[in-house]
Structures are given as structure tokens and as C-alpha cells.
Length: 416
Image (cartoon, rainbow, N blue to C red; front, side):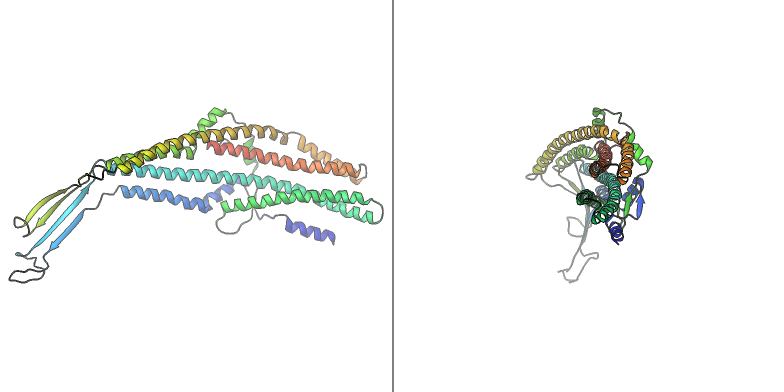
């Protein structure tokens, strides 16, 4: 009965996954389903629409005037006949100083900024996805190892409890096994809490709005890619980052946009000209008079000085932000590189003989303990260190792959 209850407990306690998914499949779902990514892509469409609008000429203006009441002897309403009065005009605004061209160039640059914003968002979300993916994978492996030990310990505890009741075994041996069991349960609970949280975050990234239960399972090829060493030195990596990072490229492009805005504001200080033609039937100096009209505002007070000054300040601000972004990028690459070097040294332990030796010794210790060839103290001491080693090996693998992904992220390139 106890074994049945214990089995049911593990059935409900261990997270069940209905769909094994590779990293490639996970990224494909992300690109297809991620709502934040899809929503932000509209910003590119919006900026393209703004560019289209800037390319359109101002509409001409047309006006018409007709006599409403004739006070002469004919006393007519709407007298627009031969002896009545009507007039009309048409005007076109002409922007001087290259305003239209500069507005178009500014809109083009803003469209490019929208694309860089989208690329930066894509880069950040992909980095999060890969981090969650491998963290879940290795934490799940650790939980599976602990579950195996818990099942074995539960069997031992049941047997030892039986023997203790018969007086064949000391109570302290049962308690020692129970303490080890509780310690493993604590480790498992901590790993499981992290796994559930990371799994939630991953599902948010790839979900299409329907509930799904996924099990990150990288292929051998997806794991092997992290085995190749980095041949670039730190300076090369930093140079690559400055060439590729969307956030840094955006800082450069923002300077360009602000310069176009400065040119536009200066051009706005040049008065626009309105040119048109007018016809007047009887209201002018001549009958059926046709006129050419030209109007221009007098730049006496408003010369757009405030906006020009603001635009100059925005250029200076953007230049400082670009320098700050450059420092941030180079430091991030340096930090990621140092982490990679350190984690690579640790990762060599995973590919050494240590894991195989651990399994061999574990099988021997467990077998000898069942045969009563080793003491309870020796068995529990080894089992504690063995389980911690298994968790540590998975933690090392997880940290190494995350360090590799941080290199990819910081340089905005696919080195792995």
C-alpha cells in the first residue's frame, strides 16, 4: 500500500511533458507564435507608412465665391450669370529650403531605427529562449537522477523500517536513511521550483495562446555545436559586436536621425511660398479678370530658433549615448568572454572520465551495501557526495552552454 501511495505521489509530483521539442523546433514556434515579437513588427509597418506619407506632396487648395444676393434692380439670389459675380482661385504650397527632401530622409532613418529596434528585441528574446531551454533540460536531468535515488532510498527505508520493528537493525540506521531522503527531497524541490518558473517563461515565448506542455530535448547536433572552441581573441569579438549589435547600431543611426532633424528644423526657418491663380468675373479692376497670386510669410519673429536649438542638443545627446553604448557593448563582450573561459575549464570535467567513474562506483557501493559489505555510514556519505556530484555536473553543463549563448548574444553573432 505504501509503495502504491509513493508511486502515485511521484506520478503527480514529477512534471510531465507531453511534447519533446528540439531547439530548432522551439525557435520555429517562437518566430511563428511570439505575440510580443509579432506586435512589435507593426512598428516597422508604421514607420514605412510614415515614410510613404512624407513622400506625398501637399494638396492644392481650391476656393470658389459666388454672389448670394444682387442688390441691383434685378434683385436676384445667386446671380452668377453674365452680369452677376463669381470668382475662383487655386493655390499650391511650395516648401523651400529642401524641407520635403529632409523630411523624407528623416522618415527613412526612423524606419531603419524601427528595424533595429525589432532586431534588438529579437536578439533579446532569442537569448532568453535559449537560456530557458537549456536550463530546463539540465535541471530536468538532475531531477530525474534524484527521483531515481529517491525510489531506491524509499525501498531501503521500507525494508529497514521492517527490520527495525523486528529488532534486527538499529533505529539510527533508519533515521540516517530518512535524513538522506529528506535532503534529496529538498534539493529536488529547489530544482523543481526553478524548472517550473523557467518552463513558464519558455512557454510564454513560444505559445500561440493555446495551452501546451513542452519538454526541451536538444538533438546531439545541437549539443555538439558547443564543443567547438572560439578561435577569435577578445579584441576581435569586441569588433564583431560593434559591427553587429542592433542596440549599438541604433545609437549610431539615432545620431543620423537627429542630424536630419536638425537640417529639417533649419530648413523650416525658410518661409514657404504659396503660388496660385485666381479668376474674378466682375469684382476686379477688369471684367473676367485672371490673376497670378504669390504669398509668403514674413519671418519677423518666428524663425524656428527654439526647435533648431533643441535639435542641436538632441544631436549632442545622441553622440554621448553612442559613446556610452560603445563602452557597454565592449564591457559586456569582455565579461561574457571571461565567463566562457572559466566555464570551459569546468566543462572539461563533464567530458572526462568522472561521470563514468561515478556510475561505476555508485553501482559497486549500492551492490555492496545490499550485501552488507559496507557500513551505513559509508553508504550514506557516498550517496550524499554522489548526488551532489550529479547535480554539479548538470549545473556545469548548463552554465557552460549559457556562457556560450552569452558570447553569441554579446557579439550578436552565431559563434556556437
